[in-house]
Image 1 (cartoon, helix red, strand yellow):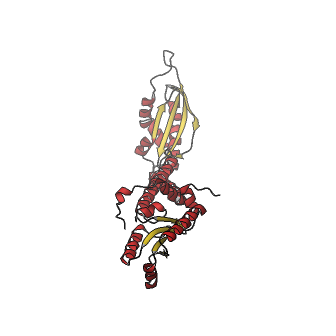
Image 2 (cartoon, rainbow, N blue to C red; image 1 turned 90 degrees about the vertical axis):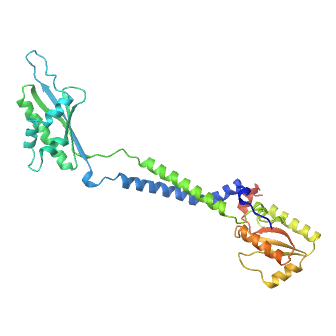
Length: 322
């Protein structure tokens, strides 16, 4: 039996990658699931309750200024002034006259925003509320109020709307793609970490290196799998029989105990080769079995692996198909 020092064993990267390759469909499934979960979470977080949704509409209003006594147009109207004018009388009073009584002055003042973006003759009116119908109603009332104001005020020849839109839901910039990518990345990271942890804890017997971690007894070879490797097993087995004599092949099958007859045959044999099923028994259990064979005075002279995955062995040892 061999004392095991797990911290000093290191990791067989080639075996790790081959095992990971076998789990690739699960990893890809986890990545796809993570992307989908990211989209769902983002959608839930981003969805605004109906009562808090905002609807906005705007109008472009042309200001046809009159000339003052000096022959120049009135330049006093700027973006800041128009915001004040829209909230003050007479414009706000005219706006409220165009609305039904259920609209309050406070609501109208909070909803309307006026600004001059570039040309002093073009005024942009923006209305934002939590209801599409109320947004349209306030914008229409504000535009009509301005048109009336253009008739009343001496500073203007005319004020008229040249464009007016209907209310639309205010939508924040979409981060759907970023959410999907983040979900996929986290799923990939978690699945790789989970697989790595599983790999470290998994001491099942795959290859000769796994046998060497359990016992100092010679590895005889692979009883099945790649033909060239199987030939090595048969060659080594023939050599042991010539050197020792009668060799008993002891096939370990899961956790099934050996019968008294099997133990007697192994004690009587000149040597015993313990045959392990590929990827079906753990190293700790193999170490226990070897201890039991020695307690029964069985002359263990080698360990072999049977029923091996041929594709796995070809990839690991670099054997050609031919």
